[in-house]
Structures are given as C-alpha cells and as structure tokens.
Amino acid sequence: MTKMEALGRQILVEFYDCNSGLINDVAYIESSMLAATEASQATIISHDFHEFSPHGVSGVVVIAESHVSIHTWPEYDYAAVDIFTCGDTIDPWIIQEELKEALESNNSSSVEMKRGLFNVDNGQRLHHKPQKPAEVVLHDE
Amino acid sequence: MTKMEALGRQILVEFYDCNSGLINDVAYIESSMLAATEASQATIISHDFHEFSPHGVSGVVVIAESHVSIHTWPEYDYAAVDIFTCGDTIDPWIIQEELKEALESNNSSSVEMKRGLFNVDNGQRLHHKPQKPAEVVLHDE
Image (cartoon, rainbow over all chains, first blue to last red; front, side):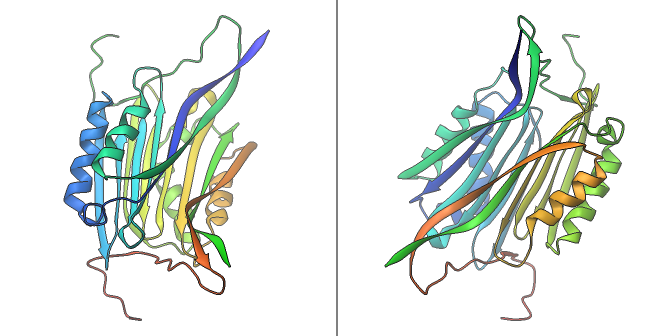
C-alpha cells in the first residue's frame, strides 16, 4: 500500500482592502515581511525588496524552507503574498496572520496548494529537509 | 454591468523526472532561469540563488512584472517553479517551456491561478502596470 505525500505546501494569499500608504512603503513592507517570517521560526537566507514608480513594492524573503514573496498594488489596496514552505517545523499560517495584521487587510482569501507529490509506502515518510545552505554548520548531524 | 478582471496570473509548475545533476547545479539553474525569463521579454530587476547541503537549489528572479522562483530537490528529480506575471506584455508559458527543456523534465504539471481579482465596468480595463523600478526612466510616459 502506498499513499501520497507532499514535499511542500504553498499558501497563495490575496490581501484586499489593505492600508494603501503602508503597502507603498518599501521599508515598512521589508521589515513586516522579515518580522512575520521570523515569527514562524523559519530560517532566513536572504531578502530583496524593490519599490516601483509611481507606486508598488515587490520583495522576496528566501528561507531555508523555501520562500515568502509579496507584490503590492497600492492603487487597488491589494497585495499578493505567497508563502512556500517545506518540512514540518514551521507553520506558514503564522506568516499569513502576521502579514494580515501588518498590512491592515480587511478582506483576504487564501488557498493552500500541495507541492511535490510522491507516492510513499505506508509507514514511510518523505525525507523533508528543511534545506540548509551549504555554508551553515548543522549542529545536529 | 461589471466583469471580473485579474491583475496577475501565476503558473505553479511541478517538474518531475528532471535531470538530477542539472537541478543540483546552482550556476546552471541560475543561468537557465535568467535565460528563460529573458526569452519571455520580462524585465529582470534582480536575482538571488543559493545552493544547499547536501543538495538542492533555491532561487528567485524578481522581474518588473512580478517574479519567477525555483526550489529543487535533486534527490527526488523534482523542481517546483512559480511564474507570477502581471500585465499583457509577456507570456509566462514561454518561461515554463524553456525551463522544462533546461531541466530535462520528462513529466510536469502546471496550474494557472488568477491573482488580484476586481470588478470592472464593461468596456473598462484594470490598469496593469508592468511596474517599473523607481530608478528606471520611463521613455514612453
């Protein structure tokens, strides 16, 4: 007997009715994304944020467990967030909750997708890393 | 009368049965992601790639039209790719096709999601930017 297991899960979040001033502020978005990611205990590898003219912010936080991305359209009070995680050690919904509060979104919807589906024998598990970057020393291996 | 329009579209691609050597090579993945993105005529803003120990690569290309991300699990011959674009000027499926060939994936599946849905009056359009970074001079405005 086999069953399907997923390597990762991804939450696609539509944040509507956000505070348009906040989601047009690249420094605020960057610090909010980092704080939300840290709240989930994810391991941050790098981050990269950009502001656009006349408005809008895009940014990505690469984490050992995959990534968190954001694109904002202040003119529509809207932000698109993806939270992609692998492994069981972090809860991506913590990031969703933190960002909902930070962006002051009054209307949001989220879809969770499974990524990387494989058949495994019953009683077996997929070997989820959280992947560690090559330069990180693994104390528990 | 109104109709729903989307600010963006996102293709979630599962690339199975990839060449495990290629998807464990961070330089190869980075150059393949950049080449695929360029083939679509997207405007590259920045890119950031990492390799993991004992294996795996993660990376993101931020484009003016949103982003392209990849996470690879060479031990499963698997790569998860997201292609998020806004506006009508580029075709995200070009990126999917280019990467399928580059990763030598023999089995893939893709789901396209709409992002940022709004009601607009008939005859009206959502104002899609492609967003331009603040430092880019817009020659046509």
